[in-house]
Length: 121
Image 1: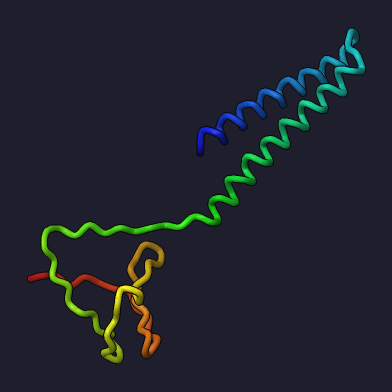
Image 2 (image 1 turned 60 degrees about the vertical axis):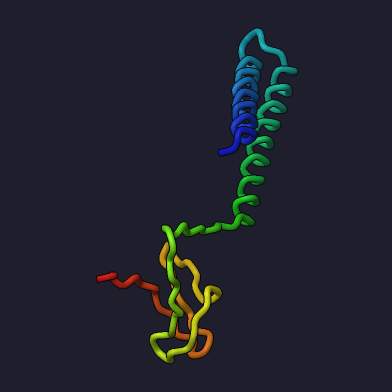
């Protein structure tokens, strides 16, 4: 949650609370009709602020990208990857992350399988 969203939510909550108090004050024996109008306006402004704060964050979340960076230790020799089905050469563009696991899609036979690391011994 960003700082701006938190501030807008707090301001909206304060406006809604004061709006409710104004509406309740208008219904008391010493209340005035103008308080009812002011209370409804404050509640409306608070609700509009909450709507726009959460609407903007939902739109920003839909357009965000996740970047996965892998830091390999020391000197690592890369072997060429071959498809398990047809033996075609695979490149980095054929590897994607699906549900947190690396998945390989062969461009030749269109086979899809999860990439597993074999033990070194």
